[in-house]
Length: 287
Image 1 (cartoon, rainbow, N blue to C red):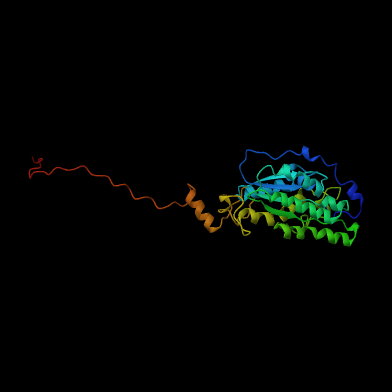
Image 2 (image 1 turned 90 degrees about the vertical axis):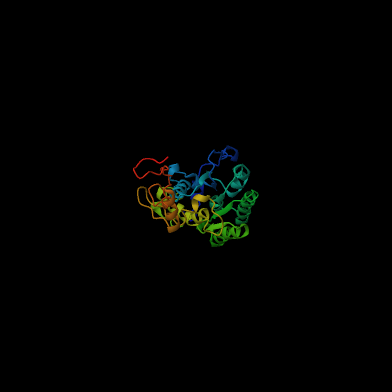
């Protein structure tokens, strides 16, 4: 939603009215996998594309293909500003969250809102999440403001994201829509919301940061549990294609797989032979 249009008309036609936060269902599931919660706007909601094509669903596919045991909960609300996301946090944090990904601020920029207010809201979102024990890992998706508000405004808006990341320990995705914003073929007719292909590109931008966090490669424990240990550094492959595992995982797979290399067979069990009675020289049993 950033740098996608050069006029204020984009802000007017941008999205439908925001639903009240109370109407957003609290994520609830019997699924016990660690939760990757993505709190965001219509980009996260997948406005204009099938839900299976929106970037949260694409990230879930990447997680599954990598063998990581996490589930993605997409909590996107069309038209929402950072203030709206802040108001929803108590509701969203009713479940335990392993990783919180925040995609917000784009609508603030479209409306020319004060960057300091946006910064305070995003900081408050993370502060609320960090009240959870143990606290979730934090990921912040940076956005850009429209050029028609001037370079001073754009500069102040751009500074929001690295500043909040530094203050809270969040891992920053430098620009969520890198390679998508301004690309006609990757955006819908409104010039704002990505197509399915645009969502796939945006998901790759997020995965570069999120993937290592989930697999425990960014200086912490694996977020997705033991499953990540055997699949670390494994690049997802298209369905039906062979997957090459790193040596440690390959050895583990061979030990566990019925068709793989097996441990040396156990020595055959020795059986006791029946006792033979001594025989006389003529071949009869002796008394």
